[in-house]
Image (tube, rainbow, N blue to C red; front, side, top):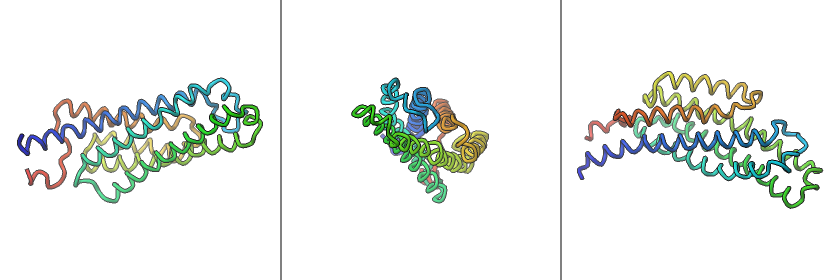
Length: 229
């Protein structure tokens, strides 16, 4: 196999892998959000009655979180690989850092809810009568609805900026990303379902990359690659 064929196959696999990982992340995160929103009341200071009737669905959603996280990391990594030398160091740092922070707080919130389930299974009566339940619920609520969502907005802004400069996707998708990210940064605390903005936007980008790849359109070529060919 010639070197040119190897490079061509690598360029075709990279956007396809990014698209598949992004789609998987989007679907998993939307399922997780749907299950948790339906099972757990939005009020972080609720009495905890959901623990007696919804522990099973909540545990299932929490077990899906690591798979969504791995898919998101794969999506970030393959996108960076596709950008190659065209990746700006400043936006790459913000892009990568905000994505990691979002995942860290998503995992932390899931761990807090998981701890609530474990303690409730061991001491159900004591847990419902304890202020620990309210403190843990408030912590998980703030992690997701304040901090994680803000990092999701920063991730969308940096990704949209990179999209404009590298033509990773159409410009209208980048501008849509800016608008949705602004909504997350400003109003996420007041909009209960605002977290779905990130997976929906990643799904849109991923579907475009996958369709673009299946049509045989050339992937973004790093600066200097053309001269090396």
